[in-house]
Length: 156
Image (cartoon, rainbow, N blue to C red):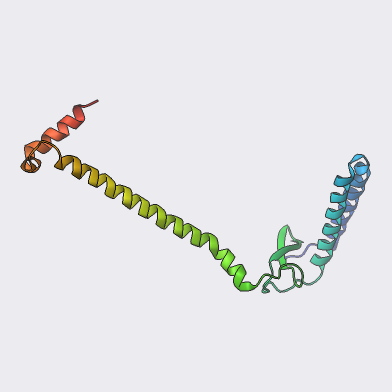
C-alpha cells in the first residue's frame, strides 16, 4: 500500500483551510445552537486529525471501537482506551447475545403455535367426518374419493 505524498497532504490541508474559512464566514447568520454544534464538530475533527497522525492503538481492548481517522479513503478504527464505558465484559456479551436468544424463542413459539393450529384443524376435519351421516366404510370406497374430488371441483 502506498502512502500519500507530502504534496497531496499539503493540498488537502490547504483545501481544508479554505473550506473552513468559507464556512466560518457563512456562519455569522446562523443561530447560536447551530454554531455551537459546528464548533463541537470542528473540535472533534481536529482531534481525529491529530490522532490519525499518531501511531494507532491496539484494537484488542475491551472498550467499544471508535473512528480514529482515515487513511487513503479507508476508515481506521481504534478504541476509546480509558474513556467511556465501564460495563463489565460478561454483561456486554450477554447484551450482545440477547437479540439472538429472543429470535430463537420467537421462532420456537411460532413453531409451537403452528403445530397447535394444525392439530386443531385435523381434529375439526375428523370431528366433521365422524359426525357425518356417511358410514365409515364409505370413506374407504375408491368411488367415494372420486365423488369428493368432482364435488369439490364443481363448487364455485
